[in-house]
Amino acid sequence: MPEAQYIAVMTTTDSEERARHLATTAVEARLAACAQIDGPVTSVYRWQDEVHSDTEWRVLYKTAADRYGELEAHIKGAHTYGNPEIVATPVAAGSDAYLAWLRTETRVSRG
Image (cartoon, rainbow, N blue to C red; front, side):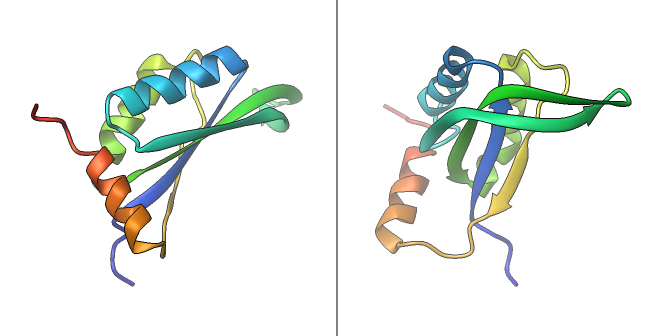
């Protein structure tokens, strides 16, 4: 299978306000064409040998695969978690028009 040109990247955070900040700043920087926020969601996970259950908001970014490194760095720099969840999933297929828009919106503006 060829390497994906487009990816969906997910992270979670502890408030809607922080989720909006993570989403907005990434789109403003053209690191993602769009970001969707859902929540609250309940996350159950093991951390430091204890099981935790917390309310979080999920941010799902859509971007070009070649923007991943910069998007990951942005998320880490803007996030309040010491070890934030950052998971990228390849987009196997999508509408030509949408993917063309996604690529255009994740290019650095020269204007």
